[in-house]
Length: 348
Image (tube, rainbow, N blue to C red; front, side, top):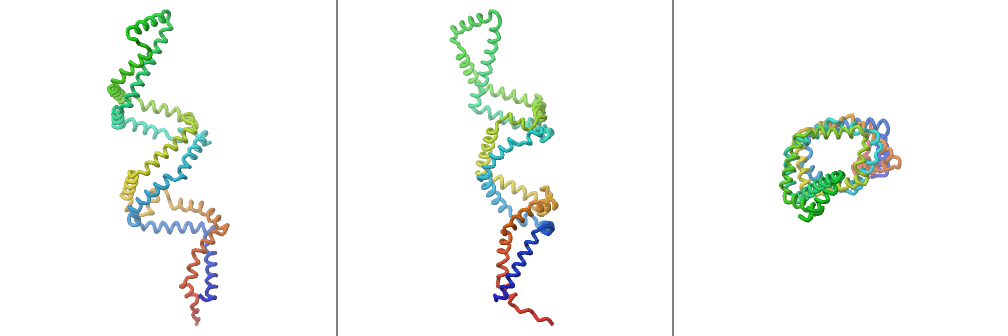
């Protein structure tokens, strides 16, 4: 490129950089955002999802994002920090639970859970298959019976003469059976243990009848109503800040562990297949209203967030440097050199 042509190319590059910067400033930026959004939507309205996006590529990308983002150090750090912030949220003192969560969907959820009889039956059946559950149940029943007998004995001893009579009876029983309170617990435990499976089945039947016949829905909603008229901060009485943090971290660990399995990959694939089956023949632009986004929303959001970012990049010359770096290869290209070196046609 000749010196003269090189000088012209540099001046053109400077002018181009200034033009682009001006396009990203003030009212021109606001106008350009609206124009560009309209242009993008016009193009998107001609693009069918299934024709421009390959489902298998989307699956691979989704798997990679879930694997990397879900277990990232940032997410792990935010889980604990967000749980602490939510626990101390000042707004929790200002709003009642019922003002945030409507009663109707809660009532519908309770009714649905209580009506899922297959779920209840299967869960109760699996409980009867667990020896450990039987052991816990036997200890639970033993405790109830023992406490009941101890309480009634304490009440009876308050009556005149009953203390001596009970002592005499206990002494006689001890001589006959060698029974003590410890032996009584042992006896009850053995008896309940032997019939644990039978007892669990009887208990399951009672639970089924309770769920299906008793007014559990009304009872559950009474509990809800007690909390609905109280500030959300009242829920702190159920657990400490440390408890919430530890629960959040444990749930995060469970989720991260699950995300690392191949089964999660199959779930992601299935979700994407469902999306393409339902929306694959739609144009891209028509999906935005389905997501609750409108053209005006996009324009307003870009006008809100773009200008501060652009102005910050312009302030230290970073943006101008990037624009120049992108345009310079064009103005120094052989094609531009040939154009600038070509003599101008003479005017008639």
